[in-house]
Image (cartoon, rainbow over all chains, first blue to last red):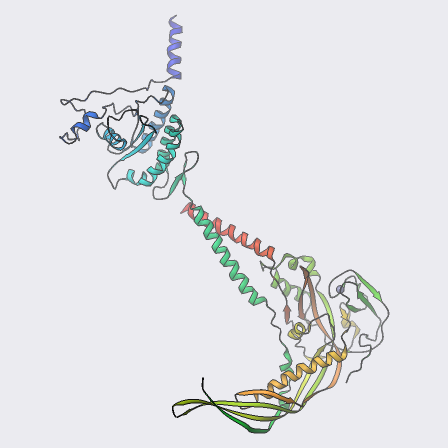
Length: 270
Length: 298
Ligand SMILES: [Zn+2]
């Protein structure tokens, strides 16, 4: 009996490693705002702070909308954890059906700012409370910092455009999984260059196909045109009669026997 | 002058062939096996009746068949737009060593040529501009001697192409010697002698008129009446050496002709549409690849 219980417990841990379903929030009060020490509570931000969920910043994945199974959460968490290990950036993913009256951008940024995440990090929010789903990606870091150079506005837009397709189709797990994959993809490539996300969610070099095709077409046209012209000139047989060389120059005798004026006409110039 | 007789026969044992494809008639001397027409390389040839005897002069080959092949190769082989048929081994191998029958003549142009000439001058008269045109009647008495003018006797080679290469030196002209013809063919003259002579006279007269014209000291000049005549002398029949290649491409014939003595070449090349397209695609592919690699690695 004890043995079988142990087996059940073991297998539980083996197949469903840890229960990640975290919807735990802590109540913020005027006595304890539960904000990071660098956040100054003022009359301006007081209400926003109180409306923003306070969470355990080590959990990283906050599935308030309950979109993922435990297994899926474990899967996503593992990948987030890997990425955080490589990049040293923080990552938070939030799903919710209620943004406490915030618009998604404010909700997301407040969530990151008023919980104890690292100074540099990325937060991704999926909101399912409206007619259409909404997603948002916040990049935190000083303007000139490396993280801002990696996750530029353009790349953030590329990422969201790609991920939104999955969200819209209801594939929340796959879309979120891809989101983490893309984060990692952009981190690993050369930050200065242009990259795009391919059909499978891989970050790949952005090859300017149209420009290359136009360039190749134009250049090859010019080269062939020039070549045809040059060779045409070179190839045309210059038919020539060498009769001039047959003239015995010593024999030339031309005498002007007569050179008479026969007529003189005066006309007005045009 | 020359007589209209059997100028297509060379006084020793020779075999005469007729090409059923291009109608060329040619002779072969010695032991050489003749399988192809020396003009169009067709195998559709027949041996015809025996020939008569006559001895022409001969200008020997100084360039080898290999020289001709190399020159031809250099012109076509690395030329991306020339059709493949021009480059095929079979084509290069069908360059023939051929003697062409020509008449070599001296010519004298003699007589009076009457020109109308004129000068125009601008004159200001009471603030009005006038043009004064003075017209002259100019009579030139001309005497010019030409030496060793070559008259092509075979219709198989176009005059304009042949004239381009025929800078033969007749100082080294030899009496006919059969061994000189050992591995070559002799194209048989097939042109009407009177027409050949007439076209020769016209060429000479045209050139003479230009000389006479350039001797007139007026700005405007126009031929009025020509009483000069061209007289031939010292005519001799000569075999001159050429390397000949005829390439058929898209129902047209292109000729490669090399002077067998001096190596001067006249060649008619053409571009193939297929080759232009293939070359364009190859260029496109290459530039595409380079641009891609640059975009990928830089
Ligand atoms: Zn033939």
